[in-house]
Image (cartoon, rainbow, N blue to C red):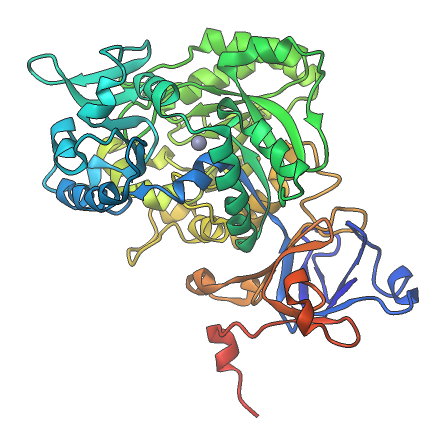
Amino acid sequence: MILENGIVRTMDPSLPVARALAIAGDTIAGGVGTHELALASPERVDLGGRCVLPGFNDAHVHFPTWSLAQRQVRLEGTRSLEEALERIAVAAREAEPGRWLRGLGWRSGDWSPPEEPTKEALDRVTGGTPTALMARDYHSLWLNTAALAQANGDLEAEGGVVERDERGEPTGVLREECAWRFRDTHVRPTEDEMVEASRAGMKIANARGVTAVHDKDGWLGALGVFQRLQAEGSLSLRVWESHPRDELDALLALPLHGAFGNDLLRLGYVKAFMDGTLGSQTAHLLDGSGVEITSRVELEETIVRAAERAFPVAVHAIGDRANRDALDAFEATRDVWRAKKLRPRVEHAQLLAPEDLPRFAELGVACSVQFSHAPSDRDLADHFWAGKTDGAYAYRSLWDSGALLANGSDAPIEELEPWAGVCAGVLRTIDERPAWHAEQRLTLEQALIATCVNPAWLAGDEKRRGKLVPGFLADLVVLDRDPFVLEPEELPSVQVVGTMLGGRWVFCKCQGAAKPDVMSDRTDDGSTSFLDTSSPLRSRRPSR
Ligand SMILES: [Zn+2]
């Protein structure tokens, strides 16, 4: 197959731009003009001036959870408790009797008047339907009386908080370990529910240019979910799967030595948590506030034990204390993980003390960050981390220090939309306001390296994917125009029009041979062209 008449951005410095790309089977072939043209009639795809990039690799996503969230009550953007309750009331009227009503996305910090949610408020609109609503950052859970009743008073857990009123009664809000324990015991989705939702979720992700993800739902059994999807032939992205630190013994009981799986699905790393989050005010800060989930010493132990079996550790750290503890632990154990050539990473790295910032590059610990978090958290950060935000979401400083940045969405906390993430990295704003800490803006190229190239390195695939060079897997995305010639503020209007995984289109706004379900449009010569997606650029083209 030959993709021609376009702008191919290879992300490889030796030949950054090409006009065409030849694909043989599932890989990128040598330059056009050799093998491919010797074929009797290679399939041709007319890019019509569109732009091809390596496929997007979301480096931090809770994929089954995000997929399930597509079907739940969504409370993002609610400006008051009343508005949230109105949305919940609509969903409660449609809820199936006897089933859980699930939802997510509330953030009481966004509400005015400022108030905390309660079970009584929820009871008014949900009645006897057990209801569990995750906060936007997944670190607080809002329950009604019917839901709380299922726990028979057994709500406490170490590392968590049960919010209580002046009489000592639970208010309906659980935090951290208490929230997660309740969810995992009482509200856990079944594997069938996750398979069904993820099957649909993959199609949405492909339509947004995603060809690979680093999943964080290992604790939820995502490995089995993806295995079932691969067995039925519907796994249409590459998955680098996590295993929870809480179940490290189970992993180490297997006779594995390092990542295990195949081209599409691999179990690759251990996921741990140092602290909570900004929104829940549970991020562990140097001023002593927040919650410690894993201590520095415990993390060291985990790193060493996992390294003995050649598994790297990815650790969630938000607060400056949590990040320092994580870095200290990686530093203390570096001989062990370096000897195994492991690629450890800190997830989020949101707030850093100035003296800790250069340590990521010095140690060789990657920063798995989420560009969208900076502009969407800016108000919370200015409020809770006042005076410290010079070291918050400091992506450009990290980049300039030599640290390896990988970009993810953290979906469902943000939408699984890599292009929006790239734009957030470049613009540092998602609304009409000027950039937040403009000095931390990345260039488009840097944002794309963090989204296409670096995640492949973290999964040990740097010689197989992430760039469009001969011998690499043909995982790519087609954009309706070349983003490198646009003004930064025009970037958000760029659209994904095609996505290819291993030489096969998994999404395509095109006509011709490319797509099985548009075979009826097949042209005589087996060629494919893209549909006119009325973008501003195209409509500006002078008509003849
Ligand atoms: Zn996450």
